[in-house]
Image (cartoon, rainbow, N blue to C red):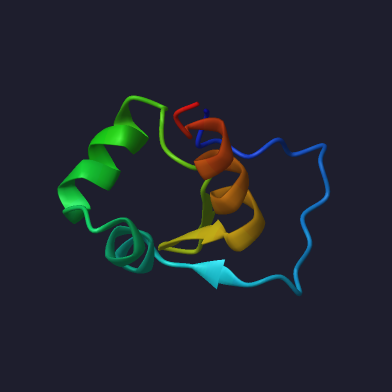
Length: 70
């Protein structure tokens, strides 16, 4: 999944936003793993807001669903 937002797609501002640190705490993974996924474009969709990186809760849940073992 790409980490570059689609500029033509509207983003809900009132949704919950997570930091990479919060994502890593939920997944119990090192932050380095998150940033490696980001570099390989396989992590959850992220948005850069100023110098801060944020992941919407809905994008994170959708990304998790795509990676569930069946």
